[in-house]
Length: 308
Image (cartoon, rainbow, N blue to C red; front, side, top):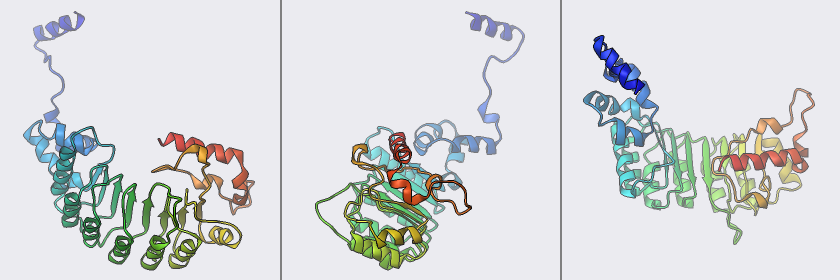
């Protein structure tokens, strides 16, 4: 009632009863606002609003980074269509793309055709891809620096193709569900053989053994961080553990999270520096005592549940 009276009063005084005219905003300001939306919100909501917004939304600069994780509950075909459209709108300027759940070989082909400048590729829980599609895409990504595939298949052959065709690769995250049934070092050998520039490696739930780990330590001399969470076939005792501590700055052991916590975290952010021995002589606890530290174990559990 009060709002109606206020609008009537404004109308009597000749004042506008409408809100701000978004079309009067400078184009640069509108572009910054739209860029904060997800690709799904842009393609399904913002771009059809008016010709100006459509012109802004189809600017290739808007699509240099495409994050299609946590997709809305759309039909699979609609998600694929949105993703392919976003890649097409990048017009070859694509630098960073993340896809969760719905990546297909057709999408991979689009990335291969438009991703000559791509620096990061993340594929999470994408089960509708095939080896041939992955091998085709990595052969066309010479500038790739970071590659992640979690809860999906990546053959040893494709790992070798990735290492040979992407000479600037520095970050590899190859995560899978734990499998204690058998041991296999083929993937570790492929990484050691073809990725000498690697600096950050995450192998959650991998089936590698001590031999595979030694091959990685020998073949990747630039390695700074190594995550072996739930790699249950690795026995880090004695000289091997000591070598890992000496060679790797950020290291997570297979047993760092107890069985009660669950399998592992897909994208866990743990601040390792909080628990590493400091070289400045301060009183920070030495890292070789962390294994039996209840506070440290509680911290890991807390980080795990926070990331779910």
